[in-house]
Length: 359
Ligand code: HEM
Ligand SMILES: *[C@@H]1O[C@H](CO)[C@@H](O)[C@H](O)[C@H]1NC(C)=O
Ligand SMILES: *[C@@H]1O[C@H](CO)[C@@H](O)[C@H](O)[C@H]1NC(C)=O
Ligand SMILES: *[C@@H]1O[C@H](CO)[C@@H](O)[C@H](O)[C@H]1NC(C)=O
Ligand SMILES: *[C@@H]1O[C@H](CO)[C@@H](O)[C@H](O)[C@H]1NC(C)=O
Ligand SMILES: *[C@@H]1O[C@H](CO)[C@@H](O)[C@H](O)[C@H]1NC(C)=O
Ligand SMILES: *[C@@H]1O[C@H](CO)[C@@H](O)[C@H](O)[C@H]1NC(C)=O
Image (cartoon, rainbow, N blue to C red):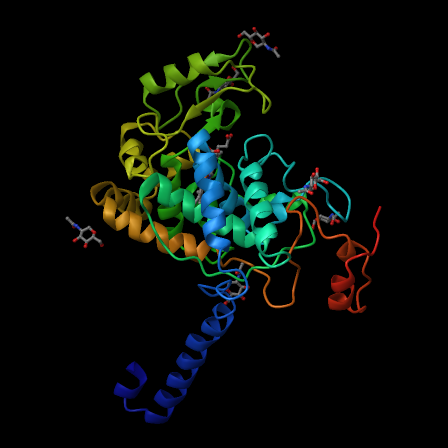
């Protein structure tokens, strides 16, 4: 448009075409996931997942937080790779890597949902879609946040612990958070919006213990990390011994007031020095991020709208669709045939007979 006003209609036309192509490209890529993907092949799919999530939530409200985080950790490549207990290629799985084990939870809920869905419509609904549906249902149960989930994800064949380097650790700086989300095409705003999920759930001590104990000092000395209120720091120090390890089975709610409610409290806690992780507090330190934090603290409706949209956006990261990947029969393991198929052989045929033996 600007080019045309400058009196270069030809250049303007080219610019328009380029703009159109750029606008169409992602639309074509996006078209592969769609709302109602199972409407004809498995009309009960979303209801069955919802029932499994509701049943688990009734037993333990914390599962909702677990399922929201599970979707995030799967989605830095949404292909259910985080569910695998065995890496067909050998080596440590994503599920066993430090950011996920022991803190990631909700696997049993996914398995229950999968069992129900397999009974109703065998070999049809992918584990990656179940994870996406379950996260949405968890947001509905905890925060009346509702959105439709475009589906049609396929399950991947690989789980590799080294893929978790894409996930931000709780020691990330604002710059590191920005870069890690940008690597997945998520903006600073998406990152700040999605971080609001820390209004539900819990954390093990290991993720924040170094903010309250200096463990290089002999003996370990009490400290208060920048941005942490001293009273909150004392509380956390009393909770978590300085000899905490990843296996120490002590957890604390990230939003102590309402740990099972998806509200905008996260943004209200940050300025009070009650962001649990170093990374949470970084959202106050960076000016652009801090402005977003204030706007979400001031307007919960605004945050919930943006959260729903950002969850959908996150759910599109590095998906496999069409004939890529597979629909896993058991979310914990790849299908027997796919692990023995040589590249170039007829994958769909092998998939049909499904009887190729493994290990
Ligand atoms: C911005 C970068 C992020 C960092 C550095 C981060 C870090 C963490 C850490 C360290 C924990 C606790 C793990 C433990 O128990 O030790 C946690 C928990 C959690 N995170 Fe994040 N996270 C981030 C973004 C997100 C996003 C994008 C979501 C989802 C949209 C999310 C949802 C959750 C939830 C719900 C929990 C609680 C899980 C439970 O109770 O089982 N986080 N996060
Ligand atoms: C896991 O990923 C790393 C880094 O890309 C690679 O070196 C390694 O071979 C992979 N392992 C498996 C079993 O695929
Ligand atoms: C981000 O977008 C670019 C351009 O559309 C694309 O090439 C790239 O694969 C995307 N990355 C991810 C992780 O989705
Ligand atoms: C932690 O203790 C070590 C050793 O006494 C000291 O050099 C370091 O400055 C302390 N760090 C902090 C953050 O207090
Ligand atoms: C950690 O410290 C506590 C006391 O604070 C002690 O009771 C416990 O045995 C220690 N654990 C390990 C593994 O050293
Ligand atoms: C809060 O955000 C909603 C949704 O964007 C908007 O409609 C509403 O006007 C905002 N409220 C205030 C007080 O700004
Ligand atoms: C799925 O696979 C795991 C790991 O092999 C196994 O323990 C579990 O029983 C299987 N679940 C079903 C429903 O077959």
